[in-house]
Amino acid sequence: MANVARMVRSNDSRNVLVVEQDEGIVRTVSARLRSRFRVTVASSARAARELATTYEFPIVLVGARLDDHGSLELAAWLKHRDPGTFVALVGEVEDPEELVTASSLDIQIADWQEIGEANDFLIALAARPRAKRISGAG
Image 1 (spheres, rainbow, N blue to C red):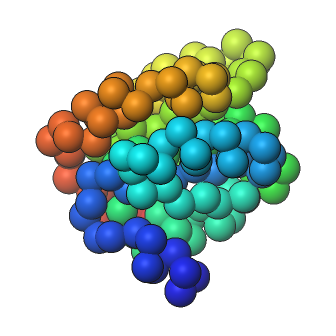
Image 2: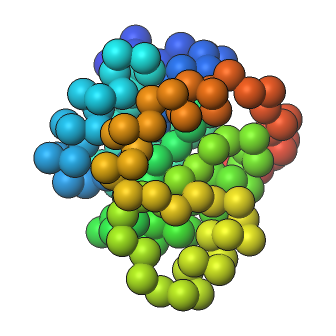
């Protein structure tokens, strides 16, 4: 995690965590976002939890089909831990119950193409005031 520590700056509104196991998607999205954000990548829900416990990410993009853990469960954990975090479940979400649950938790649904093209939107999100983190959540 030493390499990550150099990339992520504490309380930097430009920190973005991308949680995705498809290397092609990670390369494409990271390349599009790196000009304006500090992008950190986790290839599993477990790695994402470790990073989110150590560093602050105002924006988290979670791939909808993680192998090691339910993507929605990770997104819900992130929202519960820090309600001010913008969390998007990115990719194909087909289960209507997952859509309803995501909506009820203020988790956005998007596709990777939208995210790659949404730099201005993400910049606006990063600049907004954030709610306080729930102490002891984790």
